[in-house]
Image (cartoon, rainbow, N blue to C red):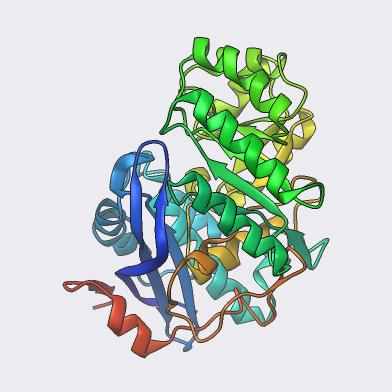
Length: 377
């Protein structure tokens, strides 16, 4: 089997409501879709997203597309997509750009699994569960709207764990808002927060214990990514888990966090790790160091979320679950089917590969112009 073409397509799908983080507000899901076609008619799909362009990390959908089109894809045309050794040789020649690599590596896994008529999780050791508890990201930007949205989803039986984006407002107001949400949702729900690096260490030392006392069940990345030592020190002041996200982008970052003593939880995101295999490796490193891996999201659509779901259902210890809510935040999708939720859990989808197929009409509707494909001569 040989790769005949690698196509990259940027799509922009509107959200059901604006999603407001401490540093950016977004109203659409912008993704790079990678489609690999082979000489045997097997096609593989991959996806990577960027939150607010290069606001969260250094990459954007535009840079991802350029890196794949100009540097990664040309070296893979004509090679066997099942040979990950070949892919690694190519990927190692491109420094950083982990989001771009993750989209291509995801598509290669889809091709390899489809060629064998097996699910992607079988290439990652096999699923140990068929579903995983899933949190909903609360980020309307309005305190009362946040509470109303969470209550509506809880009462509908869709979600029972909610992660609230804070850090845009005064810390005292944020803590009071979390207290009101915890009271409104009751004991049947769990409220977590993500500060997205908005606080300095002094502010965090004051307000992290207050969040704990307000009923918050987990606190993610309260301070800047580079202050790993400060993040570790905050865990000692808190009874609930402190989770690292932006502080750990690479395996070397994770080793440094472990060397400093670690925190309770680590957000594993396929995009920031550079693909499914390095993401699994980092999850296992975290487990060995006594940290709980957590299934993070970059607000991917169905394709990227399905890949993350296959990975997280293959990781042995995921006590904190995941937050693969991206497809439910999008107002539409470019696949023929979605991903199911049941009783607050995301269900592992069936079918060979990732188990998802492109809806060509929807792809045409949401794609940006001027896409290109690298094709064998």
